[in-house]
Image 1 (cartoon, helix red, strand yellow):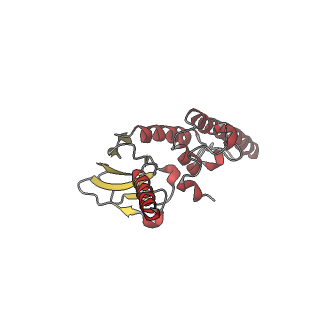
Image 2: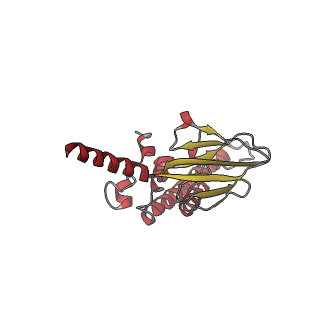
Image 3: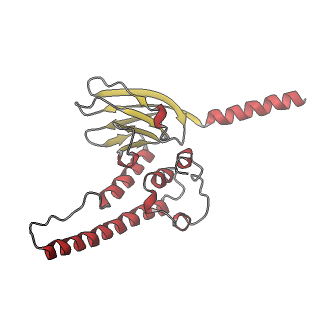
Length: 209
């Protein structure tokens, strides 16, 4: 009897583990000049898969955890800049590098929209040119630049926080926390409204510890 219970428990455990895995086909079009496209699962860059590209098209079928983040990027670095971070909520997802479009995945499109809003609102790269040798003009420009950058950073934080509040139980919140930690630092519990939301133990967040 004990042996039977052990076998049944093992089967249930295996079934549970298997149920978490999904098979998804990802394909699409890239820029004609693009020669590299990495597929990175949960930011495991050491095991990034370099996808073959032929006639500016690619296709791959993989089996991953249903809550995995699949990043498609021409660089292993800079996940916060990637336009294509996919969640396998369907069996077939298509991307278009030229238009930035994702089709076949509702959650991936939602995450893409949020991340774009956050990036677009940020002060990265913003500066004010000064065409003068007057030190006072430079000082005034730098003060104005600092003020505007602070305003942009505040707006960026508000967008990130609102996205977290409105989607507090969505798995892609884990990606927002991972990619933009400086926008949520020290306020995460207050933002989501309670401790330990279901995505807080996502493997990707362990990389930040």
